[in-house]
Length: 424
Image 1 (cartoon, rainbow, N blue to C red):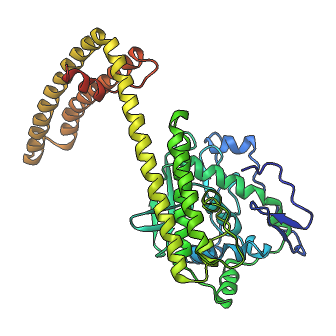
Image 2 (image 1 turned 180 degrees about the horizontal axis):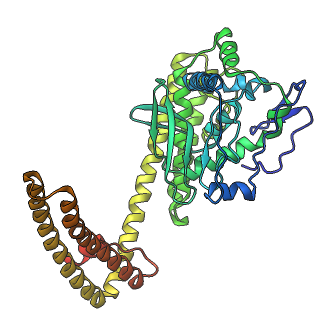
């Protein structure tokens, strides 16, 4: 997705799907949205300059909390009616009072998102919308480190419950959000926008609601998109399985859609339609029986792709294991010496650990009996505890450092060595 230096037509905005919307100029432009990162901001985010405090009065806080709640409570209503929102710039530009941020960048690039930004992001990002055993989820808030990937993210379910979790792909979340959000910075200040409450009121006045089949279609397509990305990551010689699977799905999709009725739409192919999040096909199939057939096919397709992934993953695992065994056989003598030293150190730690546990129990009994105080307990326990922990760290370093030097082009873990040596 390319959003750098986007030039929207004068008086209009161009969405990611190519749609051009007419906009309504404000009588007085709003405060400029500055999502550019300055050197001062970088210093501030790294703690080199004390950040300025932000003070909001209670009334403004209450308003923000109300809008925030209205946004999350109606997230799936917005998702279901994204075509309607993508047809009106005032809906698209409705402000959402959520501040996401990441390490180093801070809030830069994430300021003043709009309803349309979230809708495009949920479609664009592989992990901004996902499914688990508890339901379908839309991510609405995140923060974390761009270096380690550790993050705290929040999502709302189709049952209107919220949850905190650690996203498995934080970079996918923040990079896509930043790109989509900054695309519309100039429009946020120049053009009129509805409030979230007004958007909800308009959608409900038009009799719009959430269609669970359309929701399931959206999330099945998201899962299929993730599966396609995984399949494409395999080595070249494994792609014949991926290609064969999709050719079969395209043929079966054609047979299915020839038997279904659509409102003013001609199906393309599974490869194309499954990748198009802007057109929820379930909503333009007039017959409920046909809708269920279409949803069942998407479930079937997702299962087929999952099966292909398992097949390729198994093949890759076998190949990696064979490569490791070959490398370990080549370094068998050196590996045996390492393993003997490893087991010796491990036994020393186990003995020290057992003694430490007994020592700790004895100290706890003395503390309870009152023969030693808290300070005496800490004075005696801390050095013993640190000693065993230090030995464990030393062993981990010995293992990782030795194996990295011994096997430079392949990742061999101590579990691989254990399995290899036990089998000798």
